[in-house]
Image (cartoon, rainbow, N blue to C red; front, side):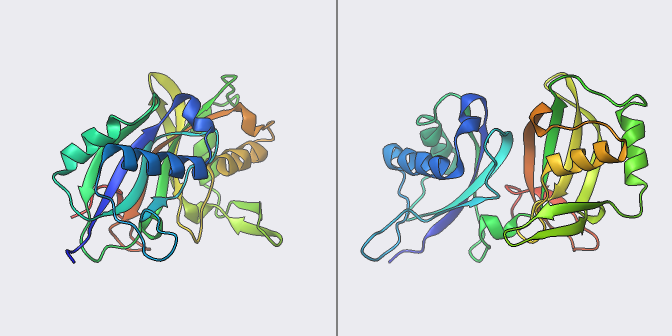
Length: 238
């Protein structure tokens, strides 16, 4: 039996497809692989399934320029041909951006996730009186940023500050916005709305998650260490 090939697929998701949940996105790609004729590998047993794993699945209602899934193949002609074949099966709003071959002993996409970047726009063009950059600088100057987080079993207090890697004014598609890069690992996954809510709470300003239009900029792995991280997009593999 020939050695299987593991590849990482990067894709974007926009428009109406942002309302499709993770399980439906998984089924969508399963059908796309079957229809494209790509030689994807299947598990054994009585109920074989495509060997596929997603990195940090996106929440319903969020758009993204940087989602990833890993698949195993029995054979591969070229990454460019695979990208073209998949894009022939994509609906409007979904696009495969890159396909890269992974090293033989690479971990799963989910295990590799370290951080995620987000663009955040307020629907009502809301802004603090002193302006966003001043408010962010003041917010990040705190020694700790304590918030309450609901877990499956209880409510716990966590310090957001170590999980915020970047927070600043930016622009996306010619619109002013906030940019955040936060911890997205399985051990410390932080949602951008949680950070914005903590900022508004400190400023004694109203907050509603429904005011936010969130786009994931990319998903990152850490090529450095925990104390000195060096983040890179998840398709930046050797």
